[in-house]
Length: 111
Image (cartoon, rainbow, N blue to C red; front, top):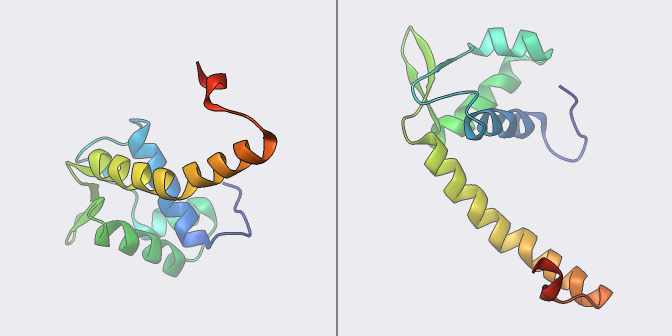
């Protein structure tokens, strides 16, 4: 995995896990690798991985079964979709609209 310098690594890892859930690669109730396993495979510090898992746990995307590991929540895909759609509509769409206005484009190009 290549990391960008514009966003913290733990957030990039959380995004990748969310993308894997959205794509169906990870399904409801699938076990995900332990903090140490995943961290070693990505070449990152376990503390960085733990921050990623904490973010996803706080958002109820994954959950921990003590002594067994982390699992994808049964409604994770819906929660991710809802959050990413909101983010897109609140942040990306206004930027796209502003850019279209600057370039003299209208919405007809989408038809």
